[in-house]
Image 1 (spheres, each protein chain N blue to C red):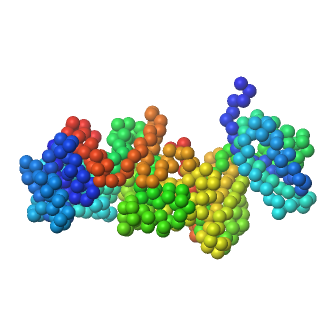
Image 2 (image 1 turned 90 degrees about the vertical axis):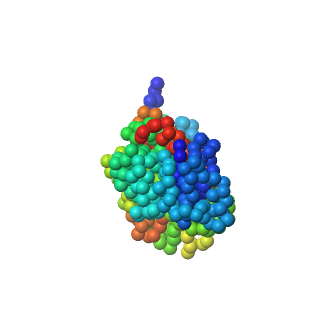
Image 3 (image 1 turned 180 degrees about the vertical axis):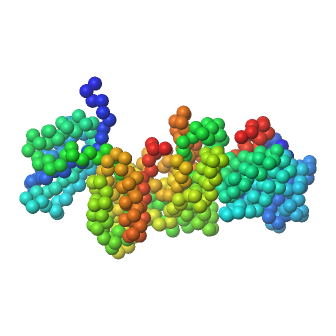
Length: 320
Length: 175
Protein backbone atom coordinates (compact mmCIF):
# COMPACT_ATOMS: atom_id res chain seq x y z
CA UNK A 1 0.00 0.00 0.00
CA UNK A 2 1.00 3.63 -0.45
CA UNK A 3 1.14 5.30 2.94
CA UNK A 4 0.90 8.96 3.90
CA UNK A 5 2.24 9.38 7.43
CA UNK A 6 1.32 12.46 9.45
CA UNK A 7 3.46 12.89 12.54
CA UNK A 8 7.13 12.06 12.83
CA UNK A 9 7.50 11.35 16.53
CA UNK A 10 8.73 7.96 17.72
CA UNK A 11 5.75 6.11 16.20
CA UNK A 12 5.41 7.98 12.89
CA UNK A 13 9.16 7.79 12.23
CA UNK A 14 9.19 4.06 13.03
CA UNK A 15 6.26 3.40 10.70
CA UNK A 16 8.15 5.24 7.95
CA UNK A 17 11.34 3.28 8.63
CA UNK A 18 9.62 -0.12 8.78
CA UNK A 19 7.08 0.38 5.96
CA UNK A 20 9.41 -0.99 3.26
CA UNK A 21 10.14 -4.11 5.29
CA UNK A 22 6.39 -4.76 5.46
CA UNK A 23 5.96 -4.27 1.71
CA UNK A 24 4.55 -0.75 1.68
CA UNK A 25 5.67 2.50 0.06
CA UNK A 26 5.72 5.82 1.91
CA UNK A 27 4.52 8.46 -0.54
CA UNK A 28 4.11 11.30 1.96
CA UNK A 29 5.55 12.19 5.33
CA UNK A 30 4.66 15.29 7.33
CA UNK A 31 5.53 16.84 10.66
CA UNK A 32 3.82 19.89 12.15
CA UNK A 33 5.84 22.33 10.01
CA UNK A 34 6.64 20.61 6.74
CA UNK A 35 6.08 17.70 4.38
CA UNK A 36 7.81 15.65 1.76
CA UNK A 37 5.84 13.83 -0.95
CA UNK A 38 6.69 11.64 -3.93
CA UNK A 39 4.16 9.48 -5.79
CA UNK A 40 6.78 6.81 -6.38
CA UNK A 41 7.99 6.77 -2.79
CA UNK A 42 9.95 9.23 -0.72
CA UNK A 43 13.49 8.69 0.55
CA UNK A 44 12.54 7.96 4.18
CA UNK A 45 16.09 7.90 5.46
CA UNK A 46 16.88 11.29 3.95
CA UNK A 47 13.66 12.83 5.27
CA UNK A 48 14.28 11.59 8.82
CA UNK A 49 17.93 12.73 8.64
CA UNK A 50 16.71 16.16 7.61
CA UNK A 51 14.24 16.12 10.47
CA UNK A 52 17.05 15.41 12.94
CA UNK A 53 19.29 18.08 11.46
CA UNK A 54 17.00 21.04 10.88
CA UNK A 55 13.72 20.00 12.51
CA UNK A 56 11.79 19.59 9.22
CA UNK A 57 11.20 16.51 7.10
CA UNK A 58 11.00 18.47 3.86
CA UNK A 59 10.29 21.78 2.22
CA UNK A 60 6.59 21.29 1.45
CA UNK A 61 3.59 22.52 3.40
CA UNK A 62 2.19 19.97 5.93
CA UNK A 63 -1.11 20.00 4.02
CA UNK A 64 0.70 18.65 0.93
CA UNK A 65 0.83 15.23 2.60
CA UNK A 66 -2.97 15.10 2.88
CA UNK A 67 -3.28 15.90 -0.84
CA UNK A 68 -0.62 13.42 -1.93
CA UNK A 69 -1.20 10.09 -3.67
CA UNK A 70 -1.79 7.43 -1.01
CA UNK A 71 -4.08 4.50 -0.16
CA UNK A 72 -3.91 4.75 3.59
CA UNK A 73 -3.33 7.67 5.94
CA UNK A 74 -1.36 6.89 9.09
CA UNK A 75 -2.26 9.49 11.73
CA UNK A 76 0.51 9.59 14.34
CA UNK A 77 0.35 13.14 15.69
CA UNK A 78 0.21 13.65 19.47
CA UNK A 79 -3.03 12.79 21.27
CA UNK A 80 -5.01 15.91 22.14
CA UNK A 81 -8.08 16.15 24.35
CA UNK A 82 -11.43 17.77 23.68
CA UNK A 83 -11.83 18.34 19.94
CA UNK A 84 -8.98 15.91 19.08
CA UNK A 85 -7.44 18.42 16.67
CA UNK A 86 -5.58 18.45 14.37
CA UNK A 87 -5.86 14.65 14.21
CA UNK A 88 -9.60 14.79 13.57
CA UNK A 89 -9.21 17.06 10.51
CA UNK A 90 -6.56 14.73 9.10
CA UNK A 91 -8.95 11.79 9.46
CA UNK A 92 -11.70 13.79 7.77
CA UNK A 93 -9.45 14.81 4.89
CA UNK A 94 -8.55 11.18 4.20
CA UNK A 95 -12.14 9.91 4.44
CA UNK A 96 -13.37 12.68 2.15
CA UNK A 97 -10.99 11.29 -0.43
CA UNK A 98 -12.22 7.73 0.28
CA UNK A 99 -8.88 6.66 1.68
CA UNK A 100 -8.30 4.24 4.56
CA UNK A 101 -7.15 5.59 7.92
CA UNK A 102 -4.96 3.97 10.56
CA UNK A 103 -4.71 5.83 13.86
CA UNK A 104 -1.86 5.80 16.34
CA UNK A 105 -3.33 9.00 17.83
CA UNK A 106 -5.86 8.17 20.55
CA UNK A 107 -7.70 11.51 20.40
CA UNK A 108 -10.14 10.97 17.52
CA UNK A 109 -11.44 7.59 18.80
CA UNK A 110 -11.35 8.53 22.50
CA UNK A 111 -12.88 11.99 22.20
CA UNK A 112 -14.94 12.01 18.99
CA UNK A 113 -15.75 8.39 18.29
CA UNK A 114 -19.23 8.96 16.89
CA UNK A 115 -18.02 11.77 14.60
CA UNK A 116 -15.18 9.64 13.28
CA UNK A 117 -17.46 6.66 12.65
CA UNK A 118 -19.89 8.99 10.86
CA UNK A 119 -17.09 10.21 8.58
CA UNK A 120 -16.17 6.58 7.92
CA UNK A 121 -19.76 5.62 7.06
CA UNK A 122 -19.90 8.38 4.44
CA UNK A 123 -16.62 7.25 2.95
CA UNK A 124 -15.31 4.30 0.98
CA UNK A 125 -12.37 4.36 3.35
CA UNK A 126 -12.05 2.19 6.43
CA UNK A 127 -10.79 2.96 9.93
CA UNK A 128 -8.45 0.93 12.14
CA UNK A 129 -6.79 1.91 15.41
CA UNK A 130 -5.05 -1.08 16.99
CA UNK A 131 -2.03 0.98 18.09
CA UNK A 132 -4.16 3.25 20.29
CA UNK A 133 -4.73 0.57 22.96
CA UNK A 134 -1.70 -1.23 24.35
CA UNK A 135 0.82 -0.41 21.61
CA UNK A 136 2.13 -3.65 20.13
CA UNK A 137 -0.43 -5.80 21.93
CA UNK A 138 -3.31 -7.11 19.78
CA UNK A 139 -6.06 -5.96 22.13
CA UNK A 140 -8.58 -4.50 19.69
CA UNK A 141 -8.08 -7.19 17.06
CA UNK A 142 -8.63 -9.85 19.74
CA UNK A 143 -11.88 -8.10 20.72
CA UNK A 144 -12.79 -7.88 17.03
CA UNK A 145 -12.06 -11.58 16.50
CA UNK A 146 -14.18 -12.57 19.51
CA UNK A 147 -16.88 -10.15 18.44
CA UNK A 148 -17.51 -7.16 20.74
CA UNK A 149 -20.90 -8.64 21.68
CA UNK A 150 -19.11 -11.65 23.18
CA UNK A 151 -16.73 -9.60 25.28
CA UNK A 152 -18.13 -8.88 28.75
CA UNK A 153 -15.34 -6.57 29.90
CA UNK A 154 -11.66 -5.84 30.01
CA UNK A 155 -9.23 -4.86 32.69
CA UNK A 156 -5.54 -4.31 32.67
CA UNK A 157 -2.36 -2.41 33.22
CA UNK A 158 -2.35 0.03 30.34
CA UNK A 159 0.33 2.54 31.17
CA UNK A 160 3.98 1.56 31.33
CA UNK A 161 5.17 4.73 33.07
CA UNK A 162 2.75 4.40 35.99
CA UNK A 163 3.51 0.70 36.23
CA UNK A 164 7.24 1.32 36.24
CA UNK A 165 6.86 3.84 39.07
CA UNK A 166 4.60 1.59 41.19
CA UNK A 167 6.66 -1.54 40.71
CA UNK A 168 9.95 0.25 41.48
CA UNK A 169 8.42 1.87 44.58
CA UNK A 170 7.23 -1.52 45.84
CA UNK A 171 10.42 -3.44 45.11
CA UNK A 172 12.96 -0.82 46.20
CA UNK A 173 10.95 0.84 48.96
CA UNK A 174 11.61 4.23 47.37
CA UNK A 175 9.29 7.24 47.36
CA UNK A 176 7.16 8.39 44.42
CA UNK A 177 9.18 11.53 43.60
CA UNK A 178 12.45 9.63 43.68
CA UNK A 179 11.26 6.85 41.36
CA UNK A 180 9.58 9.32 39.00
CA UNK A 181 12.84 11.28 38.65
CA UNK A 182 14.65 8.03 37.93
CA UNK A 183 12.03 7.12 35.31
CA UNK A 184 12.55 10.50 33.66
CA UNK A 185 16.33 9.95 33.60
CA UNK A 186 15.78 6.57 31.95
CA UNK A 187 13.41 8.07 29.38
CA UNK A 188 10.54 5.92 30.70
CA UNK A 189 8.62 9.00 31.88
CA UNK A 190 8.08 12.23 29.99
CA UNK A 191 9.35 15.57 31.32
CA UNK A 192 5.67 16.26 32.06
CA UNK A 193 4.48 12.88 33.34
CA UNK A 194 1.00 14.03 34.39
CA UNK A 195 -0.77 12.39 31.44
CA UNK A 196 0.59 9.02 32.57
CA UNK A 197 0.66 9.21 36.37
CA UNK A 198 -2.73 10.89 36.69
CA UNK A 199 -4.28 7.99 34.81
CA UNK A 200 -5.43 10.01 31.77
CA UNK A 201 -3.56 7.91 29.23
CA UNK A 202 -4.91 4.62 30.63
CA UNK A 203 -8.39 6.15 30.78
CA UNK A 204 -8.28 7.16 27.09
CA UNK A 205 -7.40 3.56 26.16
CA UNK A 206 -10.28 2.26 28.26
CA UNK A 207 -12.64 4.79 26.68
CA UNK A 208 -11.61 3.53 23.23
CA UNK A 209 -12.33 -0.06 24.30
CA UNK A 210 -15.67 1.06 25.79
CA UNK A 211 -16.58 2.66 22.45
CA UNK A 212 -15.73 -0.53 20.60
CA UNK A 213 -17.71 -2.68 23.04
CA UNK A 214 -20.71 -0.33 22.90
CA UNK A 215 -20.97 -0.88 19.13
CA UNK A 216 -22.52 2.51 18.52
CA UNK A 217 -25.18 2.15 21.23
CA UNK A 218 -23.45 4.80 23.28
CA UNK A 219 -20.49 7.10 22.84
CA UNK A 220 -17.82 7.40 25.51
CA UNK A 221 -15.34 10.21 26.10
CA UNK A 222 -12.87 10.92 28.89
CA UNK A 223 -15.67 12.68 30.80
CA UNK A 224 -17.37 9.27 31.25
CA UNK A 225 -14.36 7.77 32.99
CA UNK A 226 -13.76 7.67 36.74
CA UNK A 227 -10.03 8.38 36.94
CA UNK A 228 -7.59 8.38 39.84
CA UNK A 229 -3.79 8.52 39.56
CA UNK A 230 -0.87 7.22 41.56
CA UNK A 231 0.88 10.38 42.76
CA UNK A 232 -0.49 10.20 46.33
CA UNK A 233 0.40 6.60 47.09
CA UNK A 234 2.94 6.43 49.93
CA UNK A 235 5.64 3.78 49.91
CA UNK A 236 4.32 2.57 53.27
CA UNK A 237 1.04 1.50 51.62
CA UNK A 238 2.94 -0.56 49.07
CA UNK A 239 4.95 -2.17 51.86
CA UNK A 240 1.79 -3.09 53.78
CA UNK A 241 0.37 -4.62 50.62
CA UNK A 242 3.53 -6.57 49.97
CA UNK A 243 3.65 -7.95 53.53
CA UNK A 244 0.23 -9.39 52.79
CA UNK A 245 1.23 -11.01 49.49
CA UNK A 246 -0.34 -8.22 47.46
CA UNK A 247 0.73 -5.32 45.35
CA UNK A 248 -0.79 -2.15 43.91
CA UNK A 249 -1.22 -1.57 40.19
CA UNK A 250 -2.88 1.22 38.20
CA UNK A 251 -5.76 -0.76 36.72
CA UNK A 252 -8.10 0.29 33.95
CA UNK A 253 -11.47 -1.45 33.77
CA UNK A 254 -14.34 -1.42 31.34
CA UNK A 255 -17.21 -3.35 32.90
CA UNK A 256 -20.97 -3.07 32.50
CA UNK A 257 -20.77 0.19 30.61
CA UNK A 258 -18.55 1.94 33.13
CA UNK A 259 -14.96 3.02 32.73
CA UNK A 260 -12.73 3.21 35.77
CA UNK A 261 -9.00 3.78 36.21
CA UNK A 262 -7.29 3.82 39.59
CA UNK A 263 -4.76 2.16 41.84
CA UNK A 264 -6.03 -1.24 42.99
CA UNK A 265 -4.78 -4.03 45.19
CA UNK A 266 -3.99 -7.23 43.31
CA UNK A 267 -2.37 -10.44 44.54
CA UNK A 268 1.39 -10.45 43.84
CA UNK A 269 0.88 -13.70 41.97
CA UNK A 270 -1.82 -12.26 39.71
CA UNK A 271 -1.07 -12.03 36.03
CA UNK A 272 -2.00 -8.36 36.38
CA UNK A 273 1.03 -7.79 38.64
CA UNK A 274 3.31 -7.14 35.67
CA UNK A 275 6.50 -5.27 36.47
CA UNK A 276 8.36 -2.40 34.84
CA UNK A 277 6.98 -0.99 31.61
CA UNK A 278 5.17 -4.23 30.69
CA UNK A 279 1.44 -3.93 29.96
CA UNK A 280 -1.30 -6.54 30.22
CA UNK A 281 -4.95 -6.64 29.27
CA UNK A 282 -7.41 -9.32 30.36
CA UNK A 283 -10.33 -9.76 28.01
CA UNK A 284 -13.32 -11.52 29.58
CA UNK A 285 -15.36 -13.32 26.96
CA UNK A 286 -18.71 -15.05 27.11
CA UNK A 287 -17.59 -18.23 25.39
CA UNK A 288 -13.82 -18.35 25.55
CA UNK A 289 -13.20 -17.43 29.18
CA UNK A 290 -10.45 -15.01 29.99
CA UNK A 291 -7.83 -14.09 27.43
CA UNK A 292 -4.64 -12.42 28.62
CA UNK A 293 -2.69 -10.26 26.22
CA UNK A 294 0.57 -8.86 27.51
CA UNK A 295 3.57 -7.13 26.01
CA UNK A 296 5.02 -3.77 25.09
CA UNK A 297 2.40 -1.11 25.45
CA UNK A 298 4.56 1.68 24.08
CA UNK A 299 7.70 2.39 22.12
CA UNK A 300 8.28 3.53 18.53
CA UNK A 301 8.90 0.25 16.65
CA UNK A 302 6.52 -1.67 18.92
CA UNK A 303 3.60 0.68 18.30
CA UNK A 304 4.56 0.94 14.62
CA UNK A 305 4.17 -2.84 14.37
CA UNK A 306 0.52 -2.45 15.44
CA UNK A 307 0.01 0.31 12.85
CA UNK A 308 1.51 -1.92 10.16
CA UNK A 309 -0.66 -4.86 11.27
CA UNK A 310 -3.69 -2.60 10.69
CA UNK A 311 -2.37 -1.67 7.24
CA UNK A 312 -1.97 -5.36 6.41
CA UNK A 313 -5.55 -6.08 7.52
CA UNK A 314 -6.83 -3.26 5.33
CA UNK A 315 -4.79 -4.56 2.43
CA UNK A 316 -6.16 -8.08 2.82
CA UNK A 317 -9.63 -6.57 2.71
CA UNK A 318 -11.01 -7.35 6.15
CA UNK A 319 -13.79 -4.91 6.86
CA UNK A 320 -14.56 -4.37 10.49
CA UNK B 1 -19.01 -37.49 49.36
CA UNK B 2 -19.75 -36.03 52.76
CA UNK B 3 -18.21 -32.60 52.05
CA UNK B 4 -19.92 -31.05 49.11
CA UNK B 5 -19.49 -27.41 50.04
CA UNK B 6 -16.83 -24.90 49.11
CA UNK B 7 -14.84 -23.38 52.01
CA UNK B 8 -16.27 -20.20 53.52
CA UNK B 9 -14.64 -17.59 55.68
CA UNK B 10 -15.87 -17.53 59.28
CA UNK B 11 -15.21 -15.28 62.23
CA UNK B 12 -15.26 -16.74 65.72
CA UNK B 13 -15.14 -14.53 68.81
CA UNK B 14 -13.56 -16.10 71.84
CA UNK B 15 -12.84 -15.01 75.38
CA UNK B 16 -9.66 -16.44 76.73
CA UNK B 17 -8.46 -16.70 80.29
CA UNK B 18 -5.33 -14.57 80.69
CA UNK B 19 -2.94 -17.45 81.18
CA UNK B 20 0.07 -18.59 79.15
CA UNK B 21 -0.73 -21.12 76.48
CA UNK B 22 -4.44 -20.30 76.24
CA UNK B 23 -4.26 -18.78 72.75
CA UNK B 24 -2.34 -21.73 71.42
CA UNK B 25 -4.85 -24.11 73.01
CA UNK B 26 -7.70 -22.22 71.34
CA UNK B 27 -6.10 -22.36 67.91
CA UNK B 28 -5.18 -26.04 67.97
CA UNK B 29 -8.66 -27.39 67.02
CA UNK B 30 -8.72 -25.17 63.93
CA UNK B 31 -5.73 -26.87 62.37
CA UNK B 32 -6.66 -30.30 63.66
CA UNK B 33 -10.14 -30.18 62.19
CA UNK B 34 -8.99 -28.99 58.79
CA UNK B 35 -9.61 -25.23 59.04
CA UNK B 36 -7.31 -22.68 57.50
CA UNK B 37 -6.42 -19.90 59.94
CA UNK B 38 -6.58 -16.50 58.24
CA UNK B 39 -6.00 -14.01 61.03
CA UNK B 40 -6.14 -13.47 64.76
CA UNK B 41 -7.19 -10.20 66.33
CA UNK B 42 -5.93 -10.36 69.86
CA UNK B 43 -7.08 -7.40 71.96
CA UNK B 44 -4.70 -7.97 74.86
CA UNK B 45 -5.05 -4.51 76.32
CA UNK B 46 -8.82 -4.53 76.23
CA UNK B 47 -10.05 -7.05 78.79
CA UNK B 48 -13.70 -7.93 79.20
CA UNK B 49 -15.48 -7.09 82.49
CA UNK B 50 -14.78 -10.64 83.58
CA UNK B 51 -11.05 -10.10 83.06
CA UNK B 52 -10.89 -12.22 79.96
CA UNK B 53 -9.12 -11.37 76.71
CA UNK B 54 -11.34 -11.06 73.64
CA UNK B 55 -9.92 -12.73 70.57
CA UNK B 56 -11.36 -12.68 67.10
CA UNK B 57 -10.29 -15.47 64.79
CA UNK B 58 -10.90 -15.56 61.03
CA UNK B 59 -10.69 -18.92 59.43
CA UNK B 60 -11.57 -20.64 56.24
CA UNK B 61 -13.25 -24.04 56.26
CA UNK B 62 -16.07 -26.00 54.70
CA UNK B 63 -19.31 -25.68 56.68
CA UNK B 64 -18.88 -29.26 57.98
CA UNK B 65 -15.36 -28.63 59.22
CA UNK B 66 -16.40 -25.31 60.71
CA UNK B 67 -19.09 -27.04 62.81
CA UNK B 68 -16.53 -29.58 63.98
CA UNK B 69 -14.10 -26.83 64.98
CA UNK B 70 -16.71 -24.96 67.05
CA UNK B 71 -17.81 -28.22 68.73
CA UNK B 72 -14.21 -29.05 69.57
CA UNK B 73 -13.54 -25.56 70.99
CA UNK B 74 -16.59 -25.84 73.23
CA UNK B 75 -15.73 -29.33 74.41
CA UNK B 76 -12.24 -28.08 75.28
CA UNK B 77 -13.87 -25.56 77.61
CA UNK B 78 -12.96 -22.53 75.56
CA UNK B 79 -15.45 -19.72 75.82
CA UNK B 80 -16.90 -19.22 72.34
CA UNK B 81 -18.94 -16.03 72.58
CA UNK B 82 -19.96 -15.78 68.98
CA UNK B 83 -19.89 -18.30 66.20
CA UNK B 84 -22.25 -19.41 63.54
CA UNK B 85 -24.54 -16.42 63.88
CA UNK B 86 -22.39 -14.44 61.50
CA UNK B 87 -20.93 -15.96 58.43
CA UNK B 88 -18.44 -13.85 56.62
CA UNK B 89 -18.10 -15.47 53.29
CA UNK B 90 -15.69 -12.96 51.86
CA UNK B 91 -12.62 -11.22 53.09
CA UNK B 92 -11.87 -7.74 51.81
CA UNK B 93 -8.48 -6.08 52.07
CA UNK B 94 -8.14 -2.34 51.52
CA UNK B 95 -5.29 0.11 51.99
CA UNK B 96 -5.85 3.52 53.52
CA UNK B 97 -3.35 6.32 53.32
CA UNK B 98 -3.18 9.92 54.41
CA UNK B 99 -3.09 11.59 57.78
CA UNK B 100 -4.58 8.51 59.44
CA UNK B 101 -3.48 9.21 62.98
CA UNK B 102 -4.45 12.86 63.33
CA UNK B 103 -7.83 12.27 61.69
CA UNK B 104 -8.66 9.83 64.48
CA UNK B 105 -7.71 6.28 63.69
CA UNK B 106 -9.99 4.64 66.22
CA UNK B 107 -12.86 6.90 65.17
CA UNK B 108 -12.31 5.78 61.56
CA UNK B 109 -12.36 2.12 62.52
CA UNK B 110 -15.35 2.54 64.79
CA UNK B 111 -17.33 4.29 62.08
CA UNK B 112 -16.50 1.59 59.58
CA UNK B 113 -17.71 -1.01 62.07
CA UNK B 114 -20.88 0.92 62.90
CA UNK B 115 -21.91 1.75 59.36
CA UNK B 116 -21.33 -1.60 57.74
CA UNK B 117 -22.21 -5.15 58.49
CA UNK B 118 -18.60 -6.25 58.74
CA UNK B 119 -15.98 -7.37 61.15
CA UNK B 120 -12.53 -5.84 61.20
CA UNK B 121 -10.33 -8.89 61.29
CA UNK B 122 -6.95 -7.24 60.97
CA UNK B 123 -5.50 -3.76 60.94
CA UNK B 124 -1.90 -2.82 60.47
CA UNK B 125 -0.57 0.73 60.57
CA UNK B 126 2.64 1.94 59.02
CA UNK B 127 3.71 5.45 59.98
CA UNK B 128 7.35 5.72 58.93
CA UNK B 129 7.44 9.53 59.26
CA UNK B 130 5.87 9.57 62.68
CA UNK B 131 2.25 9.99 63.60
CA UNK B 132 1.71 13.51 62.31
CA UNK B 133 2.62 12.75 58.69
CA UNK B 134 1.30 10.56 55.89
CA UNK B 135 0.78 7.03 57.08
CA UNK B 136 -0.80 3.92 55.66
CA UNK B 137 -3.02 1.23 57.03
CA UNK B 138 -3.99 -2.18 55.79
CA UNK B 139 -7.45 -3.22 56.78
CA UNK B 140 -8.84 -6.71 56.42
CA UNK B 141 -12.59 -6.97 56.74
CA UNK B 142 -14.84 -9.96 56.94
CA UNK B 143 -18.00 -9.26 54.96
CA UNK B 144 -21.07 -11.15 53.96
CA UNK B 145 -21.52 -12.28 50.43
CA UNK B 146 -22.86 -9.57 48.16
CA UNK B 147 -21.96 -6.77 50.57
CA UNK B 148 -18.68 -5.75 48.92
CA UNK B 149 -19.97 -2.79 46.94
CA UNK B 150 -21.97 -1.36 49.83
CA UNK B 151 -19.04 -1.78 52.23
CA UNK B 152 -16.70 -0.05 49.81
CA UNK B 153 -19.04 2.86 49.32
CA UNK B 154 -19.19 3.43 53.11
CA UNK B 155 -15.40 3.26 53.24
CA UNK B 156 -15.10 5.76 50.39
CA UNK B 157 -17.46 8.14 52.15
CA UNK B 158 -15.58 8.05 55.45
CA UNK B 159 -12.24 8.37 53.66
CA UNK B 160 -13.50 11.29 51.59
CA UNK B 161 -14.60 13.15 54.67
CA UNK B 162 -11.21 12.62 56.35
CA UNK B 163 -9.25 13.28 53.15
CA UNK B 164 -7.83 9.77 53.14
CA UNK B 165 -7.09 7.72 50.05
CA UNK B 166 -8.61 4.26 49.76
CA UNK B 167 -6.94 1.71 47.53
CA UNK B 168 -9.53 -0.92 46.77
CA UNK B 169 -8.98 -4.52 45.81
CA UNK B 170 -9.64 -5.69 42.28
CA UNK B 171 -11.97 -8.61 41.77
CA UNK B 172 -10.71 -10.58 38.86
CA UNK B 173 -13.55 -13.02 38.86
CA UNK B 174 -16.43 -10.61 38.74
CA UNK B 175 -16.53 -9.38 35.16
